[in-house]
Length: 212
Image (cartoon, rainbow, N blue to C red; front, side):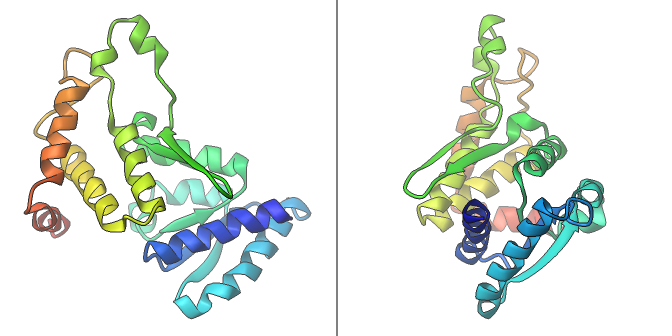
């Protein structure tokens, strides 16, 4: 129970710190009543401590949630999810693939005292063996850097990094990184992202894409 309480409270604290107003609990508590049922009960108990912050809590079953993530009318409404490890492995891979592949997703390992942020896919040794290391996509590490900044309280800086990633990979796309010599190197792509981060018009540029 202590571990469940810790991860659930961490989810609500993340929502509070980052201005999110919805935390979704993902389980299969209608079937796994003893284990997932306990997870659901603990999450909803902790949710009561955050009602005064305007944070709402709801619950979805893992099977329908996998469908909702590829439903354009539903996916954008979710803000923070908290779920047991197995379901987390499923949804993070699905979400990573939706946004461009697991190579574009960052990850965080957060403990009571320390936290570590890294690329979700590891070090990609196969690319090194094949002589393609210079074409590795740095998006995962850049995303992880944004998560680190957010974790230590630099919310505005984290948002700038994330918005620069959005523009470079979803909207403007001035360069393409493919993991091979058909695209640019990781260094070229990183410099592109850095130029966007340092652009005084970054916010205005990002907003212009939200109305398209």
